[in-house]
Length: 110
Image (cartoon, rainbow, N blue to C red; front, side, top):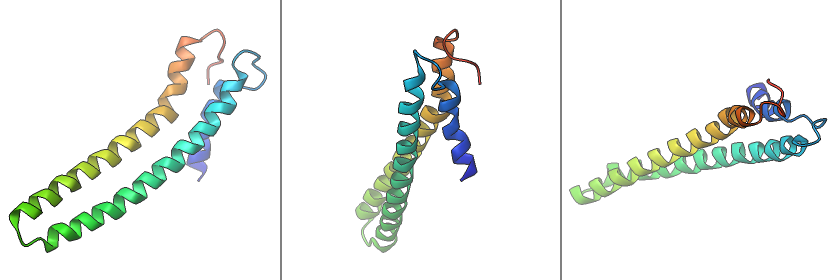
């Protein structure tokens, strides 16, 4: 839990409320960051449940074509969950640095 709160603090450090031009961005990105972590948890949970279901379908399939179809769906689910996790982490960890690079005179370095 402290790891997540440290990550969420990155936006507030980049855009303090005392900054008249960009202070609002800290509040907006802080809220968006929390929402993204919730979405990541929901997608991960749904992906895990669906992957278990597909694994059962794969194990119970009597026909090779059904096995191949379940295998393709399972691979697709794993890729989708991995891409979602990577995008959320990119947004929350690297985007503050990117924005700071574009506005070095307005944003204090963290």
